[in-house]
Structures are given as structure tokens and as C-alpha cells.
Image (cartoon, rainbow, N blue to C red; front, top):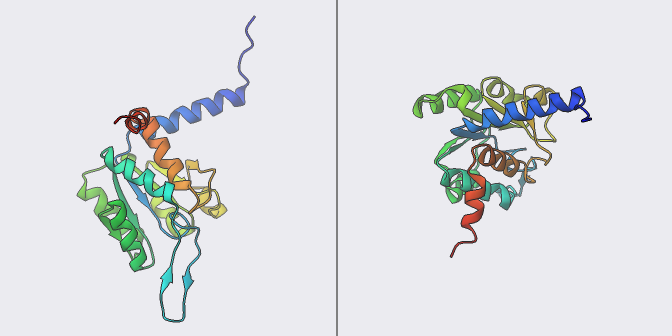
Length: 190
């Protein structure tokens, strides 16, 4: 006689399937910078230079998404030349800096790409991200996001911001769309 699944296991499976179904429809990933693409540390020197540290695997995940035809954009409240440089290296062409109301840039992107909210994933870490997370079809919080921000997330990463969290999300989207294995296999082709 086969044992049936416990109710919480069934609920977790249904919840996981729901997230995968949403991720299948994602056409745009929007990223915050400080605390998402970086660990949140802002290092300033006496000459006014700003330093940020980015995780290489996050960058590769972004490149894979772009290669798969999924748009990637950045919306951040601060302005930094380092962000412009990193975005350029990764092929991100839509970069909105010094956004005090991130919803304005969000709406521009939605209109530009003729998207519905349900086709957008957003990764944030702080309460300034919550208004967009409330709109996006796949709102994501990094594991070290504020607790108030996590309340708006459908998905919370295992990794911290700037430490592979973005890669978790890019892989999840690609796997949900059924693209991951083909991309993985391409690395073994000559």
C-alpha cells in the first residue's frame, strides 16, 4: 500500500510548480544593484572613487538570459560609473540610475517592451524595491533582504546579494522555460 504525501509536502510541491509556471512566462528580469548585484557594501576612497564587488557567476547568468532572448534591465536609486561599466560588460542596455521612484522606470520598460506585469521578474533587497515587487509577476528577494521586503517576494534566494543570488534566479528562469539543458549542453560542443 502506497503512503500518501503529507499535506505540507503537497503544498510545497504545488507552490514550487506555481513559481515555475510564472517563471516560464518571464520576458524581462529587472535588477536592483546595491544588495542584489553587490553585497551592499559601498567603498569610497579619499579621491571620491566608488568601488563595488560583483559576483562573476551572477554576470554569467545574466549573459545566458540575454542569449536566450530575455531582456535584462537595472533600476537603482544611486548613480555610479561602476554600474554603467558592469552593465556594458554584461550587455545590459537598459540602466536607470538615481531612481527615487523605481516604478517610473519600471513602467517605461513595460511600455517599451509591450509587456504585462506577469512577464516581469524583479530582484530586490530593501523596502525601496517593494513597490515594484508588488507589481512584478515574479518578485524575488535575496536571502539577506530585509524582512519587510521578503513579505513581497514570491521567491527568496538561498544566496545573499552579491554572492550568487542573481544566478539562482537566472538558472531558475532558464530551467522553468526548458532552456537550461540546451544551454548547458552547448558548452560541451566544439
